[in-house]
Structures are given as C-alpha cells and as structure tokens.
Length: 142
Image (cartoon, rainbow, N blue to C red; front, top):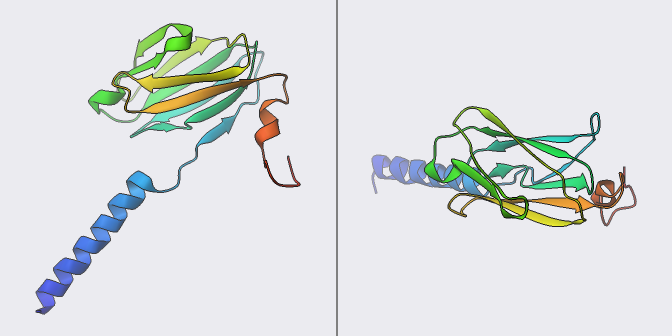
C-alpha cells in the first residue's frame, strides 16, 4: 500500500464518520414550553428533521409553533397536523406560524407532506404537566 492509498482510505473514513454523526448524532429532541401571555410558543427548525421533534404543552391552552424551514428539500415543504386539520406550506428560509389548541391531553403527531419527517406535540394536564418529564428518573425535577 502506498502513502496515497493510506491517505485516501483515512480521508474516506473521516468523511463517512462525519456524515454518520451529522445524520445520526444526538439532537435536541424535546422542548418544554413556558407560556407567554396565554399562548404557548415554540420555535421549530426544519432541517433534515424537526428540532425539537417532541414538544410538551399544557392541554386546553393555545399553542403557536413557529416553523423555520432552514433547507430546500422537497419533503420538508409542508407540515401536516391531521388531528387539527392543518396542512400548511413551509417556504424555505422563512418562519411560518401554526396555531392550534389541544383541547384534551394526548399525543398529537405532525409530519412533512411525504411522511418522512415526523414530530409530536404532547399535551398534558396543568401548567406543571410538561415539567413532570424534566429529569424523569432522577431526584432533581427542576
């Protein structure tokens, strides 16, 4: 094996590891909402997925999700909340507000137009309901 062969193999390995880290590495996956003026608001970045992909809110209070689409991939050009009758276009590099009120506690999934990207809103009872999952399994619950 020549030096050039070793360099090419090493570079290929580094690029492969970098790509795997980008697509499969850790992400911020949950967001607990602190209500502002009666509306629970969360910014969601759309880039090869939803960040955060799980959003905890209080049931019975309005929710405003601000979707910022930071890409031009075809599969992320729409967001669909079937449980709320929402099917909205997300223009690239713009923020699109989606507002609804989860009347009952539960798990409300959302997805892109092609069902490749998925997320969920978890509506819980009471203002502190969303905080119940903070530090779950630990003595400290914040």
